[in-house]
Image (cartoon, rainbow, N blue to C red; front, side, top):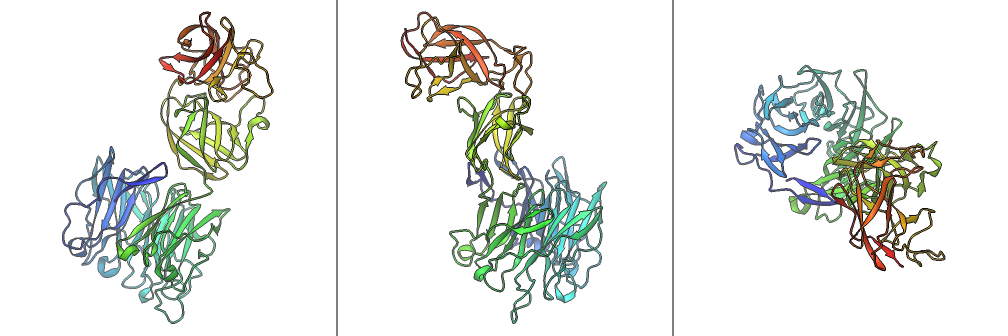
Length: 593
């Protein structure tokens, strides 16, 4: 089953996925699953298909609907039966390369198969992968598999390596010109305790393929217990110049309960390889848990306490499977034993990570959803910034900062110009990103939010407001033209018919000449709006003397108008229109003779 998140809420998308062409009653579809980076391609393993030869099924999503793509994937060149093809699966980021493990091929030696997609058709790429240097008859290569984002680096775990000892290992393979070769010797982590460590039970790769993590659930077994049921651990390896070396000591999470925790039963990495999650489904009498680790300067440390999802029923075995989002801020933990093996999954989010609220990217004046290039935007959410600050000290010679107190904003892949930061709100000037759907993210320190999406349009006019409804309006001498009493302790005079006033706003779009972005504008040039602006006051057309970006400011528009002579007294709606787009019809200006 596929689930999608919107505004922090998860919902199932469509019906369960059941592949066609399955053979036999115990196909075990779903024993392994993987997604492409965009979430539009899925692969599902079923190692029991056709008398335990096994198979895998690929699905694609279009318009929120999932359909099977082609026939099930079957292995060529397998030896004997069972093969358990499909016991593990992985996809490249673009979904065009798949790897499928078959841990019992050739009497338990095991192998992995690569498939490539072209024009929607899947074909096996080369012969099966079998790592050299294996020891023993039941190595179980293919027990776990993973791919780098580009699909050109693969890791294959074999937790039965080293004869009957089941010490385990992992093998690296690289692709060039469609040909796969083993890269270096098998990986075996140091510091393991006991003969049946089962390294290679689980594996994962960073997006660039230069960081690998290998789980071994049998490490450090308690005295007198079955040697394959250990405390467990995970090992990290890094690649440099084509060579792999272990990075630091093995990872063992603290706070575990019981001797047979089985840490390393599952592992996953963030895209940059700096965040790892390690599942241990034997923790606390098979209740299970997961542990987070982060890397800084090549050193790994545990992040917080172990993760245990609420609402579990019985021995849930949380941590039997795990996965991480690319940014490492969202984790999912599977528990196959929950509620008498009905099973469940729990989602965790990094509580320190910045989070953009649903529809939280809005016009900086109207607070309506949307972006206008080179205009003010407001981002609403949580953990957006540690302090409250403005760009006053970071504004150098009129150039606006793209980072303020370690906080930055990306809009459509370009940096925004950050003016104000606080834990729940950021005000910034949008970069020149054009129009269309834009990805927006906030980075606070070294943690980046899950990207939000917002629509960029050429114009979305709005006036900044006083007291939530009165437009920021000044006379030519910059005195305030607003109802008296709006500001405590300050006497103001509202506009009267015939007054020339300046309305201040944003979102009025392109200028002529084109204005520079990210700087305070000079006073020696006028940047008029490229399209004419009309304004009505109380439904009466006002004379507009001009609309332009204000000198000495960034992305701030001035619209100079004359209050119509026939305007009555009272709070009158003031609406600006440019290129058919109107400012919100909730802004009122007080007119008083």
